[in-house]
Length: 402
Ligand SMILES: [Zn+2]
Image (cartoon, rainbow, N blue to C red; front, side, top):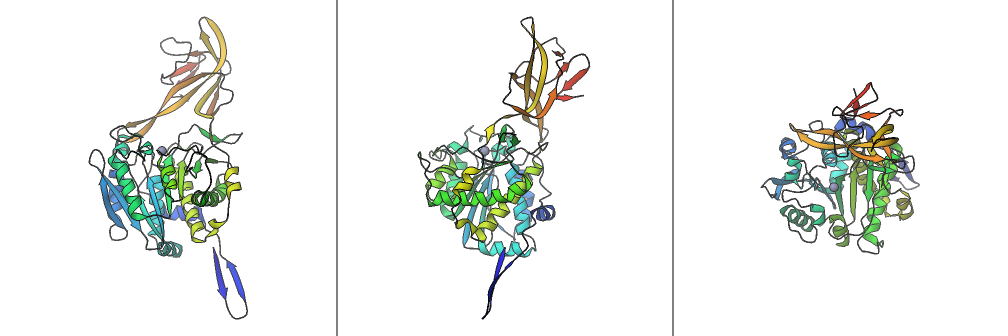
């Protein structure tokens, strides 16, 4: 942050201390939300506590009649429209949004400045039925992020109404991505990915798309200090049915956020923090007007994320296939299952083969020992639970050695 001080003789610029994102997160994290299962039931007490502080509105109802809430915060000229959980099981960004609201509701001097400069319009859970059922799609099994032309679903209509009435200067389209994505050659997990969506098939860059590009590079610059090499750029092929592409083509700079995997963080409590850092640094960049500079080169230098990870990779295992022994590799992927009001992770065998271009978030060397199961299988079966033995002594349950 800079403060310009003028007097008759001099104009000088005092560089203020950069924001301490970690300290802000520690102080203002919304402790009432955690884990992967975030629904209307979880956010309603928070919304209640913000009554009289921010403007809370029911914008409409979902297929199953659940309220779709919005939160209006601030009175400033620059309007930012943020929505999360368009895909019901993508809750990390919702947690980060409530961390941001907690900061905005604080006595911190900068939060007051932001509330005077910006108006934030937040739809924290656009797809409450999907959130409740822990599904990507809504209750009619429609992917709302493919419904921006047809507007066939009540949730899509609510989002469009909010967009048209609020007339935002910026849109934040907030999602989670699976653990399969990595960045670079190492590779590292794509903990956060961004996209400034295309607005036409040629993927040209106009002023609108450029603004979103510049904003992303400001957020990337901050994130690189904390998670170097773990920020990815999403594929920008144009699809007008996707909401980001639609809003960008309607003339509003739109940023896609994808909260991804951080080492060991399946609850996404660490990734949540980095989304908070991104939100705050992006807002700060708009406030300081540093995003007016063309940053296309920096943006396209952010590596594209790519599918290179399994959750667990088992290497050098001996299998018995058609009475022939063979040393190979196999992989397991967690299936997220809603159980007793929380999300559990079931390790399912997902691939067998060389897999030498792939990596595991966890890797197990089987040292050429044989694979076997309780019922006598000598070869891993795709889609089965990852419960097995390696050699005589090593027992694995749900993909973990016990
Ligand atoms: Zn999504």
